[in-house]
Image (cartoon, rainbow, N blue to C red; front, side):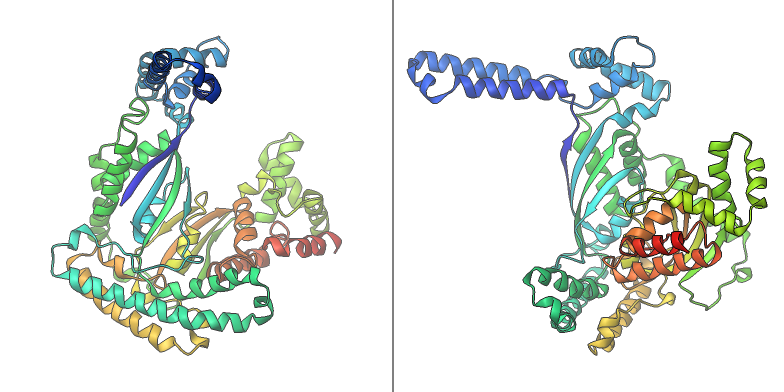
Amino acid sequence: MRVLLAGFNLDIETIKELKSFVERVAERLDGERFATLGSVEQQQLIQQLQKEALLLLNQDNLTPETLSAAYARISRNPKPINELRQIARQEVERARKSNQNIIFGLGHSSVAEHATFNFDILGVSRYAVETIEHFRLASYTEKSQRYILFKNDFVIPQEIKNTKWKKNYINLIKEQNAVYQKLYDVLNPYFFELYQESAKEKANHRRIEGLAKEDARYAISLATQTQLGMTVNARTLENMIAKCNCHRLHEIREYGNKLYDAIKNLAPSIVKYTSSTEYLEEKSQKICDFITETFNYDVFNKSDDKIDVILADADEDADDRVLAAVLFKYYGGDFKDAIRHIKKMSIAEQKQFYQIIYNSMNPWDSILREFEFVDFTFELIISASNYGQLKRHRMANISAQYYDITLGVTIPDSIINIGMKQLFMDIMEKTNSFYLRMREEHPTIAPYVLTNAHRRRILFKINLRELYHFSRLREDSHAQWDIRNTAKQMCDIIKSRFPLCAALLGGKDQFIHLYSKFLNN
């Protein structure tokens, strides 16, 4: 695993200084002018430029801390912001003390959000990425198993490197990868035949090859190595490192340590409380112990019903609530009064109200914020592949159970169509058998061998505005079929229950049809 600091934000004046210096160097070392100088003068000029460069680079203001310090002073100092930035750049140690006092003394942690960092994260497992990308207030771009053919690269957990499990672990994952390659070799020509008209255009070849990679990947494990880029502010980074440092997996603890090593000397005044705490370390175990001691699991409904999408909870008056929130904003009464007025309206009048709200909307326009006052909670049973995409919708509330092999696996239709279902299921059965044996001794490590096809239960709470974003992205024809199926089931349920506020739910490619149908009927 490698964690590299790829970049961070700097004060624009610092950037201008560096740029100006480079321009001066280029001008003074101009070939013709430089050649006219004597050798002694040339040497003196070079030494002078070296000295200037060292002075410039040795300044402590090559850090995002000065921006945090300057912005922290805005609320208490009448000086213009640009002057506060200049002061912070000139007095970095004082700026750092100011950060320490304001962020950690007074508790105004939001000041740390003005500093941002970019990281290259390489050689981590897909299983670890589920934790890495758990944090909401960061941005991630990950190597895609839909577009890149993966090689035989996988993570061997530190916990089993010197145990009896290592050899069989490696053998199983290599066998999974061999199945992956076999599936791809057959799926690739299958999809080219299926889309032969489209395949006549060379520009479409990469997309068609991607379909084969997309479905073959259901056979590979969560131990598969990947890489990603991450952008995160200092406040979230501190929380991230602290939580990683007390994680049950060695891979995540190592990741937390490497994150901290990458920035500890760069921004010591805004990333401070990174050590594991008793609260973070023991919270999960204490909750599990209490549940075990308190509840009789036999009283819980563990039905064999494997419905993939269930609407677990919803605001029953969703159509009314959105209109009431809009009315509240423009009307001036209290919310209960707004609800009372909306409930007096006929269905036709309510529809007309929604038509006005939707009028002139484009597929790329965000729907009104008032749609956030309606919440839905879904219970989902989805594959690891599906979850890998679902987890990116971090503004929703996602609570995931551990992977559960009794929920079965998701099998791409294409694998059935090419007659390789048995090969696929054989490797799934081998995986399940090894997983169960390994889980007895290493319960936290065993999920590494599970595949993208294995499934888990998810509790997914989302407001209606965010559901519109989710739907436009995930119901679109360009979306991956697994999450597209889940999104469609979710949105079909909502549209059947709430035909007005959910009328335009659908992929971007469906928007014009949905818009025209609702506004013209």
